[in-house]
Image 1 (cartoon, helix red, strand yellow):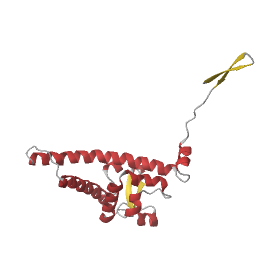
Image 2 (cartoon, rainbow, N blue to C red):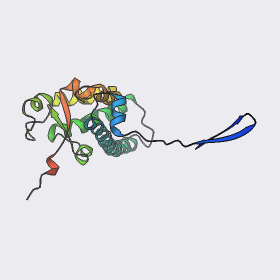
Image 3 (spheres, one colour):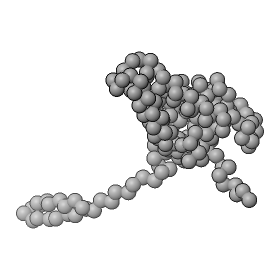
Image 4 (cartoon, one colour):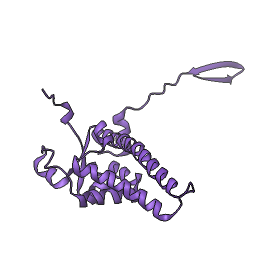
Length: 187
């Protein structure tokens, strides 16, 4: 509420104005960011971020185990060799590439119902079996390398892309989709 006091010809007047703040809806926010940005793209980006956070927690535990073993082998001294950091980066790559090539999902992606599929197979069939949609090791390594080089900037590309693909999706020829297999009931 805003109160304004004015003096006119010796008379005091009090004017009150009430302001209402209306939070913009999701659709209005999407239109401001990009006119063609869909709700599906925005929520997929949030799901990707959440699944990446889950996977980072798993990687931190794995890195902790590796570091503990190396510190014991180094007589309790700190491990600060550049090859140590390269080892951790390669282990992270093996973690992601292994999951992506075997089942199309990391544990974080499974929790958030996401799957990595080969883009060319996806464009042809739209509904493919689990084995048809798996990406190759070359695509998975490209995805990991570009993802680690671009880090979060590659995901921001999703907001500008007309198909909602990230930079890693474009460069590796793969795509992250919402996995609807969890909706099917198994008897």
